[in-house]
Structures are given as C-alpha cells and as structure tokens.
Length: 281
Image (cartoon, rainbow, N blue to C red):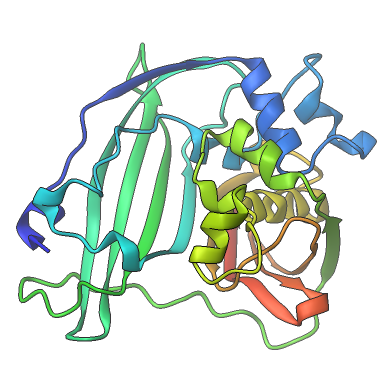
C-alpha cells in the first residue's frame, strides 16, 4: 500500500439530484412499508427521508481498486459505518459530495490496518453541510505499511443491563434484491450464488448497510416517535453476515440523548451489528 497516496486521497466533487421515488425505494429496501407507522417514509404525502438514506447518496467513482494505491482489495472487509446528520435529509434535493480519507491506522505486520473514509454531503446551491457518511474498512492484507498511523477510536461500550426496548424485523428472501436497487450497490455477492460460494459463504448475503438501515428504523420507532429529525448520528460495527430471510432482532438501551443498540440473528445466535450508538437531538 502506498500510504501517502491513500491518506491524501480526495475524490472529484460529485453532484447528484435525487427524487422522492429514491427516498421511498430506499425505505422499502430497509423494510419500511408494511407497518402503518412507516407511511411517512413510503407515501409522497408529507414524505420524510430516513437518516440512513444518506449512505446511498453522492457516491464517487470507484478508486479502491486503482493499482496505484496498492491496496489488497481481496482482503478488505467493511468494519464500521457512521452517519452524522447536520440537517435532516430532504425527500428530494440536489447535493454535492466529496470523499476523503480521514483515518489510516496501522495495526502492525500481519495484523492489518484500518481506514476510515468520509463522504461529505452538502447542499449543491448553498454549500450548507447536510451529512458526513463515514465508512471504516479493515485492510487485512495491508498492515505494517511503515508510515504514520492515526489513532483508532475505541468501540462504543454497550450498557451492562437488560435492554429498554427490543424490536424485530423478518427480512424477506428477496430483501437483498430490493436493497441493491434501492442503494445502487450491485456487488454480486448479494445476488449471485456462485460469487457467494467462491467467498466461502453458503449463499448470497444481505448488504450490511441494509441491516444498518433496519436498525435505524427500530431506533426511530422505539425512541424517537418515528421522527427522522431526532437522529444526529448513527454508528455501528459489522460483526457477522445476515442472510435474506433472517430475523433481525434489535436490542436498545436509552440514556438521555443517546441510544445504544446491537442486532442479533437468533437462529444462529449471532450478533450481526454491535457497539451501536445513536446520538439524539
């Protein structure tokens, strides 16, 4: 890995116009729609955008696979996701975005590295910040690169007590098929059995960001009266894959202006999202 090139990366500025259909399709992709309480996210009358809709917006041209950066893409794993909302997302808007590398942390030779990328979204006309979307990846094959190492933040600690709220969502067998259209993430591992098998998986997996969006819906319903403006920041760690058809159970702990959470798939006794943190306004 060329750590200097990676750490100083900045994408071209992207301009994107999205509409109400995009916001509604995203909500459907993360399971909204069946419950009448979901109507604000799927009905054009008074339509509101889910906070995690931001993760699908303003995507830059692919750069991680560019050979000049020297990254070992085969050994790269999604580790964490964060969405920081500066103002509630509009259901339709024109935005600008730019991706930069915010953190590069060397865990050491043979232990990999961590990289956090930040996609800053802003109003295309006024330049007002809308959201910062941070993606942390685990570079399993790039540790010991020999350059400066930024400090890595400690994971959010969950309370040591029973949850205050529990919610559940039964994903559908075609959940990943819908979410890939809603998000624009066409990675074949989410739909192609052959690609999944080559990765050592029993079948296509659900997008981690779909589970992330489902968790956000649960937090909104349990602690925010379904008001998307109540979410200021939403963070989580990806810890285990989810398969379409899995039941996702979200456990939540409310503490003043903060909700801690994690997601489980009971049939495998697997924690699929962990160290979750939702900061409320």
